[in-house]
Amino acid sequence: MPKTATAAECDASPSDKPPSQACEDVDSSSEPAAGLPEAFGCNQWNDWRWQLRNRIRSVSQLQELFPTLRVPGLAEAAAKFPLAITPYYASLIQAPDTTDPIFQMCVPQGQELDDPAFLLDDPLEEGEDMPVPGLVHRYQDRALLIATTTCSAYCRHCTRKRVAGIRECSISPRRLQQVVGYLTAHPEISDVIVSGGDPFTMATDALERVIKALREVPTVDIIRVGTRTPVVMPMRITDELVQMLRKYHPIWVNTHFNHPNELTPEAAEACERLVDAGIPLGNQSVLLRGINDSPQVIEKLCRGLVRMRVRPYYLFQCDLVRGVEHFRTPLSRGLEIMEYLRGRLSGLAIPSFVVDAPHGGGKIPLLPNYIVSMSPSHTVLRNYEGILVTYPEPGAQAPASGPAGNVASPGVWELSAGRASAIVPSNSARQRRRRERKSELLVEARR
Picture 1: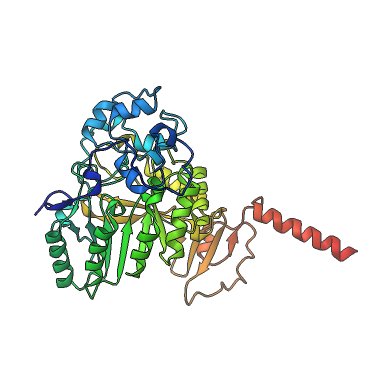
Picture 2 (picture 1 turned 45 degrees about the horizontal axis):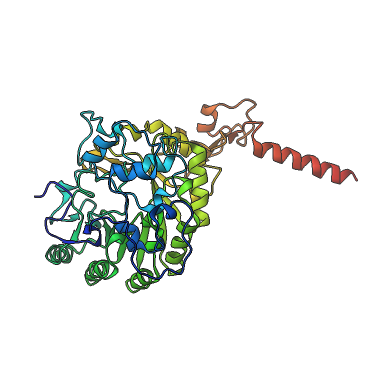
């Protein structure tokens, strides 16, 4: 059984061509994005193939674009974990140092070489759940297909740092046939996630061969694609790609915005193309120390995503993978953020905070504790404002002493015994609004 999440046989991808900053004579009707187009001296900024060919792949290229660049251990980290940044994504860097969230997510840092014993190459044990090369079958009803090891930009927090970009290639026809054979033999799998690498770095016809093969398996109902191209290379979401995807509905796409600085007009336009084609979009963020581990940053990100018609889906705790220790946050920080979001955002805009458990344990959702106490007859719940309310279980009886709510100074025991219905903080914003409204009504009644 293979021990790494990759396909042993693969086809060359377009990005196997050596990077070049030379321009080709290709028409481009769009204006260049703000940022670094002039540094590349090219009018093909909005051609995704040009972006892919002209990725920043070396430390010397980084230093040429950012002359003031000073990052300890940069060369050593880039030698161990592949470096690739699209010109577009590089243009979002506002300061070439670790104060900039985009910079931190794409530029190698010496801290990636920190190697505590509990970090692993494959902490999720994808290789152990890979019955055929390239297909991870962990949950009973779904499987994940690694269609390519190529990304347009290599995130420094990637959970597949062990394979992504080490050899840039896509799944071969022979391996795809093995995958289809396994799915056909396992009709319990109704949902297949096409992942990588990034499937949208594949040529459209190559990606279509993969999706078409999956759609021809009668028991596969849902096909999902995981991609970061709307974030790092939004010009990839072309009309050609969208029209191809439409042929294979139901198709879902999950993308990977981590910070509000990534919510650019170009990214919004890319998401709009997909949504307008009837392709639902979800977003999977990773909680990253010094980048988005602030309740206000995540709130701003979620609001921006919903405006773009992208549903915040998951907020992931950073995996225990080698090279990401400097990004990890305490679990308590994620719970703090979830506590903050509740009541400030609608349920539509709140992601699930999850830990993808080591040893292939799968996604475990974590929430603040909203259950305060339980008895056979009543459960005491807490809301985001700190209000404690009692919820009567089926068959609960009102106490003989009178209706609930008549206790002068109720505590949690009185709530769980059904002797009081709520403990309400007197100075919450909602209670102040209620008091103000009552005062207004009294004034109106006296006129």
